[in-house]
Image (cartoon, rainbow, N blue to C red):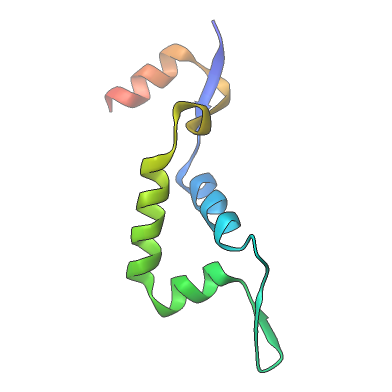
Amino acid sequence: MSQYEIISESEATERYNDILNSEGSITVAGVSFDPSYILRECDPIAYDCGFNDFVSSLTDDDIYVEGHTDSEIEETEKE
């Protein structure tokens, strides 16, 4: 039996932010900001919509990482 763990919301958020930040920071008046920070602070609705789209696009290979048994995953999915 393989062991997997469903990624947490914080892990999904980290992955989403990594995608948004992949092209580097943005500098305004000599101060650098991550694009994910700018979007989250300036347009939280757009940030949340993008995050929800990102989560919806994840496949099983993206969601499960090693750590828990298949039966634990099935139990989590039932909840």
